[in-house]
Image 1 (cartoon, rainbow, N blue to C red):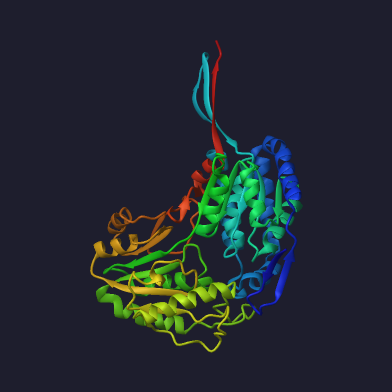
Image 2 (cartoon, rainbow, N blue to C red):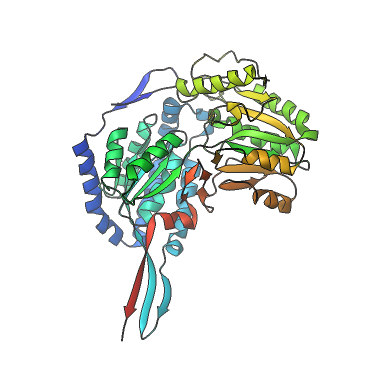
Length: 455
């Protein structure tokens, strides 16, 4: 049984039985059987059906927003995820014709030589709970548009999301076997991958989960896309707009209770601005209202599960015991469980877990640096590499710094945003592959070459 325990009050919000091995195999068989006809549909028709499905998800936003609060704790005041969900799907729909176009090398009286992009077949999407709609649509929309069928396995913390998505897409006219939502346990998922059930697997989640996917796929030659952990840094240069940097970086660290794939988890500040930055950051965090995410006045909800909050508390306690300074007094609403006081730490070092391990919660460590070289060294001192944020008025300086940072995306004067026109990718323990953009389509298809001799 898949059980969603609500972070709001610890109650069981939803339960769903997992598929048996034979039921799971049958779902895959139906997806395989439906794929050829789906791929044979004109591209424009596939795009229209997918975008109608997206619109139908948006039409249910009033119901979806409180469901998200109950499932994973995000305050209703932020209005859910449809803005980003729609932006990403729309961009991928808009570029599909060009991204999937044939590459014609020669079309003469003697030869036709062309490279086509053909779908993998069945794509398994394993989606996370923290941004459950936006992370899922990153792969679901382009995979379907490219002619694949999709099997979606959503996180146990957000079981209603997959149901909502497939209901909307089926109502739009996407055939039921073309886009399926399934509830699977870990072993059944691994067994399906090992059995070569899928042409491509996209997973967003923990490093351990990504390693399990790779082990299951070993020797199958199944394509894999992995977005795993992160410890994303921000660097505030000596010429930065300090107010803008503080506002954006602290929001990037604390929004969604710090549960963002590309959230800011460590900040390096030019030493002459360090004290002012910390003072402004503390004032912002002390202004947050921690509480029931169903209350429109709440700005910071609970973490999605008390066990995640327990890890963040442990990291903070360890850091303080090792000499770090905690600047935020415990909020009255902190219940020792999922409701957690946001925290800013100084006097931190990279010997502390809070500056090395993924926290995925509302805590950030801030360190002074003397120059760009020290900042780059510290930013690269991590097992992860998803995004980094550089704050300066000099674009050439930002790009020169970016060239030296080991990461997937570098922002200048912004953070915590996924641009669908750029490849969403990472390096090191953050994983491999790339979603969205032109490259997203390349990863969800394979090249097929045609060498046709006419005479």
